[in-house]
Image 1 (cartoon, rainbow, N blue to C red):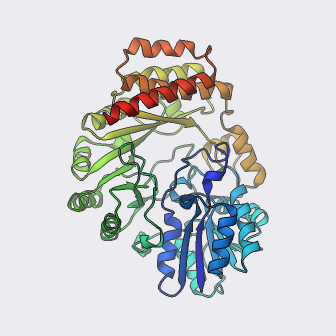
Image 2: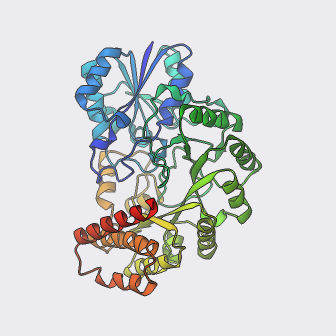
Image 3: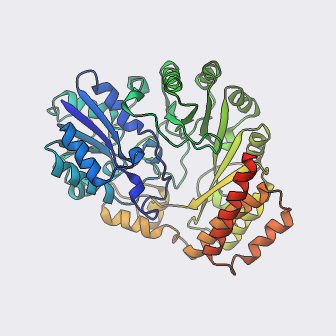
Length: 468
């Protein structure tokens, strides 16, 4: 059969719908089944996000290839399944284009069909869904000639085979990245503007109240090191100079992780990852640096101990700050994520976080956003109530609650975000701490637009300084 794996052009949707990164990442959830099926089928992978394809371009590509099956996801990449778009307007539109431009059977995967299958089937008018971690189930279903209705995760009409789960990541193939062109995929690094996404581990052992992972990518597992290294060597040969691990918890220490670091050192390529600061150790950090680690993103979320505890982060704040500062002192590009607007957020907890930003090393950068109460998360359950299935109205409630989960107005939270970015750049420019803290006093005076202009100016100055 002729199988098309399609990643829609996510650049076309509003930041209010998709607050995540507007730069493309390798769609690994499509590349895994594409690699498996390439042994017996003709495969085409179209990344409309990377190529910036409009609707007309997509129609022409569909008519040219004439696929018999089209597989697409409701999120830009595995990295954004846990912080996905807040509606399915784009998959709905693309699904209509597929139906009008081909006779293909359409299969949709992703976070939305996993938790809201009836809504996705109704809105997108697709033939089938595969709920959960869909790689193996999609391949099994297509290899059966679409006849095996007992495939785990398969959902269509009255049929619902539960949620697919890849217990053994050894069953996943070494990805063939030749399906996609060498392109400007996001690296998550200031120095390396482009990179490739790779997965070593999947899942997380922690249960943060805001994390949207309960029905997929939850249990912690690791892939075989040889497959991971083979992929990285292939990507290096293709011309990539930087690798970004999409793992939720890269620094969960183990013999396997340390073996991976040994092999990465032999490959000789720069790479970055996401880590949890309170479980980082100095010796592991040194091993990572020596293995080529160039960037680490830490999910700190809040410097208020009260808010951190309410988010079920369970972090030791001082240990976390020590790890973050040590990372920066070792010369590793260090980025810290903050989330504002938790249900019990208050002015004094916001001030506590902003005031403590100055205690971080000047080389540490911040990235801030509003907390999103996704369906299935503990925050959503506490505010709306627990459910087994979620419908369109639940996602609409989720979207309305962003920045509105407490008594602090959303516009004030947005100013705090801009203020934290402002603090970030003032610190990097060696501005004295007392002047940085005094900038908070004008938070209620300047409109958000003025903060945005100041932020853009400081960003330009910082970039020029880094170039020199």
